[in-house]
Image (cartoon, rainbow, N blue to C red; front, side, top):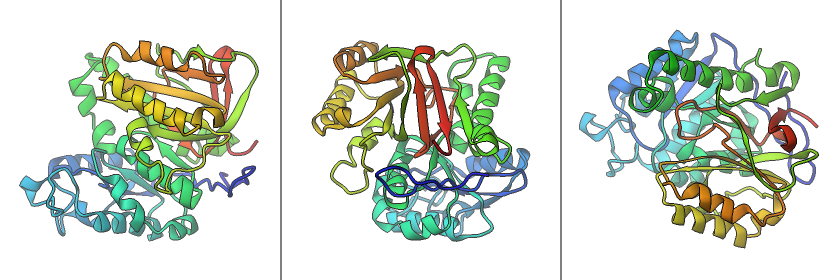
Length: 350
């Protein structure tokens, strides 16, 4: 059974109770809106997977705020937001307070989750720990919950963005067999980390694995021994914008995970320079890099250039990012890196 453990030099990190088939999953739109058809597809896929589903008020259509403007939503006045900040924050708070709900899944990312942070009930969330799953713009929520609530959360697939399959229709791989393989990998990777009979809950230890054929690669730094720390990070662009806000957790002794999408190599470089000048790469134990999807051919060369003189181990091609086949990382969990064999292990205690 997953439980909380004390981390050295910081507050207790709390592992939420694991999920069982038949449990209730709450669906929220914390950033950008979705259509009614997409909402219905989200409910359908989770029901088919064996769960009950409870929609946030905005997604139920009672005020339509989490739906697209052409379908009566977008009441914030901005088409790219699923309602105003306080309303979206209240919906997330309600999900954590509702005892009928065992996990909270995000339907999609987009823009605007950072403006929820002043309105979240961090003490209430810590008193009612639940699984929280999402990525991309949800990085702001992950970091704030790690910083203010001490909650382990999950950098994993979102329902509209990943589980109902638009990425598999629009991007590689093209064959039905390959698409099904990516979809199976996503769910198995998530369940390994959050399921009651998954590795993390069952044995207190889970090995992160990429999809078949995708190897974790060594980029630079020491390549022997073992590196330990708790995992923090997510989307690089979102993370750097939290600097100085009070919602970015301390990174001393952490393992830092970074990924991004749709940015130029130059902009990614500048964001890394900002982290460097904040002292981040002198504080962390190691760095894990996901893909920098759609960021241009120069980004790989830039990453090698930037990290080559750092005295930390850097592994790359961690498959938890904007590519098809979204692996799940437990943010705030204990992490062990074995550089020699490119092995990444998560534990509930050291």
